[in-house]
Length: 142
Image (cartoon, rainbow, N blue to C red; front, side, top):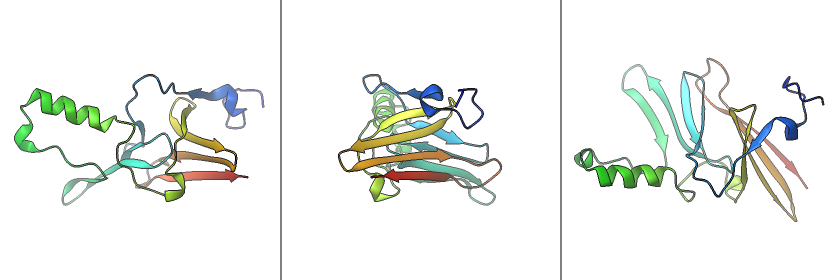
């Protein structure tokens, strides 16, 4: 546990806690094949990948931006603000649908932590190299 960033270091030495008082866009995860955005609690805001027939394929709980408003700067700003809103719709395990603290492990791996009197839930989200999917490691302690 020496903090040399070799994967075995103490998380307290390598995790950066994100300050809720500052505005952050959702946490990004991706590998060049697939990309997504993750809420602080580990639920997904969006997941996208290239498709050989239809082009870009997106899975999201957010309404698409209307093409008719593309030139309306105020509408674009409102839509972008909604994409970064803490209460933006998300999808994933319902167990994770709780308030959580957000961290970035090794400057790039989203890590959500929820802790209360009943226990602790942690979730890490990664996009394994050259794979067309995300993986989540969830640790629950009572």
